[in-house]
Image (cartoon, rainbow, N blue to C red; front, side):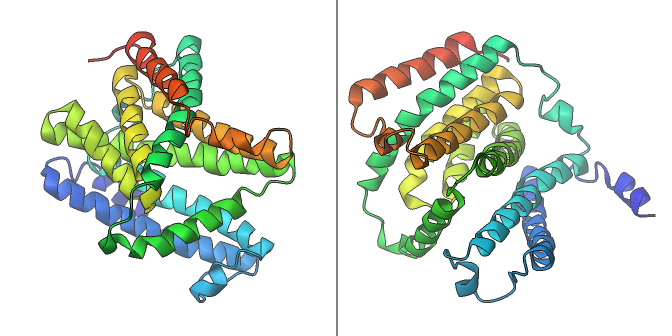
Length: 304
């Protein structure tokens, strides 16, 4: 009976207006967030003996290794429940086939994959440079509430990125590389950018609105500028490549490269200065910007 209900629900939002669709999408995302949190919390209670239904002070104990591992598990559940499943459910309820809608059936050639890897490497200095500019911007008073959230996020990120073994490295590549790239690109570029494109009739408006939401949703004021600019760039990669595989792979390469660099620094195989590359090197930023622009316009196939 449950499967029959699911089958009958396909396409029930096919005739809905765009304002309603955005509202429905938000409801689905919130529902996925709540359900994934509950499922993840129960799982962590059973596996780690950690309760995520307790006070926030207990949850954010950065010195508790077991808790950090539990939070990584929660991150996995939340990524799937907040980004991937709501996006797939939304497309299903609109009566669309996910593979066709996201253009996942379009194969990427080896040349395109190598171009995407080059793009990811060029994005790192540019992100550091934009992050430096963002740091210099004072936070408005009405956004002061973001300070605590940002401090907690940075603390958790530092704890997540503590990698002592190759197994730790692989786990972070899966969590912050694969899962983050897959989930965020399916929702933001795959669903929202396409939805805004249909609504506005302009692919450029769709790219920049989606990039703005992508940067704001992370609740990190001092990273809004790089996420906004690079989010827009990833949006154009989706447009030009004609396949959601391209932004997913680009996002994966970018995140994974940062994780690998962090691991090598922690193992003292690289100097810590490598993590700040591009912050004050204008010539390198110009070069990276040129590489990104040429790679986008020249080496990625254009799709109408």
